Image (tube, rainbow, N blue to C red):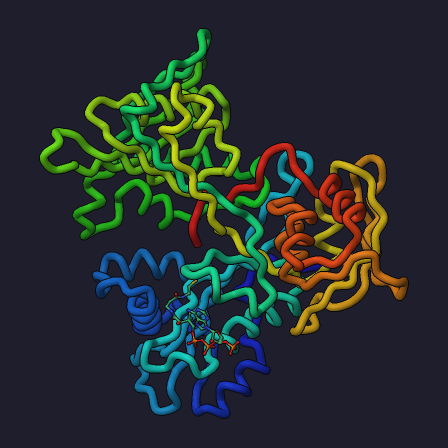
Length: 437
Ligand SMILES: CC(C)(COP(=O)(O)OP(=O)(O)OC[C@H]1O[C@@H](n2cnc3c(N)ncnc32)[C@H](O)[C@@H]1OP(=O)(O)O)[C@@H](O)C(=O)NCCC(=O)NCCS
């Protein structure tokens, strides 16, 4: 049984001991103490190169942090209200996996990883990350995840890029508009900010259950997407529309801003969040953005790599697509992760997984039955496949194929075995993660 509340999990003793040797105090921060919460929020903002948060923003961040486990690292001589020199937050949340709607795996989500610029490159982040992974494994959570500011940071801890997404840039004039098929019934309505926030949350809560790789959002995220964070002048530019079905139900929502292009009598449309639970709603919202008068370019990030947009416009060359890493996963319990999902083809292989932290290390026999269900267990048999825990983490939701990893030298197996793994692990729709965390 795993814990579903990271806040009940104590600070990792090994990281605590290692950092104490450098005169640093690694501990869970009590967010019920407003001064401690303020110091943590300020350190987090400083770490991410943001300006000093206002009191109203600290209050909102504290509400979010109260729901999470927050670790701070303090210098031994720090005053009671001193800022931590490093931070990390985590919580346990359901991540959708392939299978019937609602199939999920508990994910140890990691956020707010910062180390003060005065204390960088002396091993603090390593202790933060290893501490998170040991704490999650001890709590019985089978997999950890994060999104990264840089793609070079987390591979060393066993994370693999698992959920690629697409950044789309659409030349709206060249696209020559989107013509909706006859019979598309969705209509569009502008939303006031409060209603936009509610619609973003409502639609995401439904779509994330069917979108492999996605996780729930949280109130501060929807508030930010809807432009409701106090003191942010840019937030006042946020506008929203919803796609309404024939019965009046919200089936999709778009939050966006318009950025004037000087001397052109036009603007760029920046998608903040676009979510739709039906193809009709998605088409209607894309048509709204691309067909909008006076728009030069539409920008959208975190779209699924199989977004139908290029197939909606008249000129596909109007759409520039950059696929980039977004969701990073780190398997902690190999059998639990491999057994949690449904597969598309039968398979029987022995995987030799190497894990420098020892958590997922070992040989594992994965048997997938004709109905797509799997069993996985430790074995002493000779391996068919050898790979690192980072590569298995990249593979587990079908975000990359075993053939590609083999070609990159990240997985050792015969071409035939790699192909069989690919057939079993692939998905009809790409995994996707529509939020940063
Ligand atoms: C990224 C960050 C947390 C690293 O903290 P740090 O305490 O300096 O890192 P460590 O000293 O523990 O370094 C651990 C390892 O990561 C490497 N590393 C650290 N930062 C790196 C970076 N930005 N890119 C590539 N490698 C990095 C180190 O070289 C070291 O490698 P090694 O263990 O193989 O020798 C810190 O630079 C930071 O706070 N950056 C700004 C906020 C940020 O981007 N956070 C990440 C959010 S996803």
